[in-house]
Image (cartoon, rainbow, N blue to C red):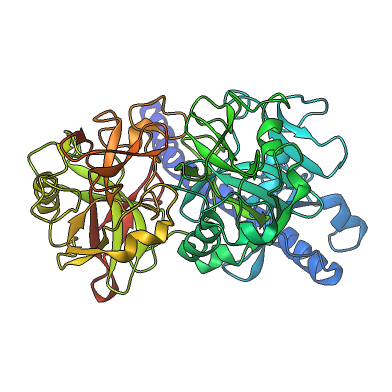
Length: 552
């Protein structure tokens, strides 16, 4: 007689089968899902391949920002079959193909997107800015009433907070752009230097072309820019006429000055005070008020006139072709940015920021012992950098107006320089210009006398020898968190004399004034870092105020 399975045996078999199922089901399920995902990947590849074939036959153009190509268009034009099903969901494929031209890799990029959401970056700066416009805007981004292709910014910093651009080592504000011509007009957010503009008020284009300020902008400043930036700057017409008729005289240049009408337009049309162009710091305009006076904006944002012997800040204005933006939101602390950045001190751009370790015990660079510098200039074996801020205490200048390395000012300077490791610092002597800068002088006159040293102070007329760090003021044009000891003083010394008894110094409202050597002022150190055959590699950072380069 055959015996059947007992209940216990059946239960054991069922349990074993259950265990086997529990073990094998995830494997089988994963295999099925992988198979479906692979099928979906192949389907997406076929969609992107269809888009590529479409691009070849239809010459879609070279767009660095993303464009969209609907799946229905690919179907209707015969590049894709109808009713393509998603192998994972068994639903019909929806969405579009995003495409753009990838300059670095010299090829098109095609990306299927089910939601058809176009990424903001990378994209045309003009197209990104256009997203800020709404019909009827009276502040922020507005459309010109006489030119439908022209857009410009107007309003306070609260109303215009997203037109900051980090480009070529400088922070710019977008003044306006032409949607049709694909051009943008920019002004530096910070004053770049402080100088007298000319030997006499310009009353003709020829006279302007002989001015100090035209030369500084179109030679000194221009030559400091990277060649890739220069190549994108267009000739532009600048209004340099009398302030009541700014285009009475015009000139075509690569770099120029803001005119009075542009400044007013940024405000209520009659004054630019409290507008986004009012930085609570003094700077020159391109217009005269008479044969004796030139127009400028004072530290209160008011439009005033003064003699050409006066010395206030210089803000550069340029026009560029549209550029591709790769990040940022256009604010003060997150400027719109382009992709390129430096890899070492050989290819760094003037104006970019570097963090350098500090071993001094004077707390010159805060608790993190990292000093932030900004590049002033470059030569064959070093880069000249200026502390982005001040040393923690003021100092007297010295015993005479002609500075030497034995002056009182060199005590804190040497102490500071010795806190920078020779791994990074170029320790051989370099030339510092210590000549006179009296009222109305040419900034180049300071080169008449020199001092050989490996540390010094800013020189009148060179880059960042104005109030670009906004000492002890309202911090309207910089992020105070990026400045070393910003309230240590309202002034800092330069290398240059004013007269036989006074020395030049920069003040908190952007002017160059003068004072006795026995007075105390802030100290803004200038040193050299290694470059050339001893170039220092950067291991991180973007070269911006918020993200300086990090040294290896």
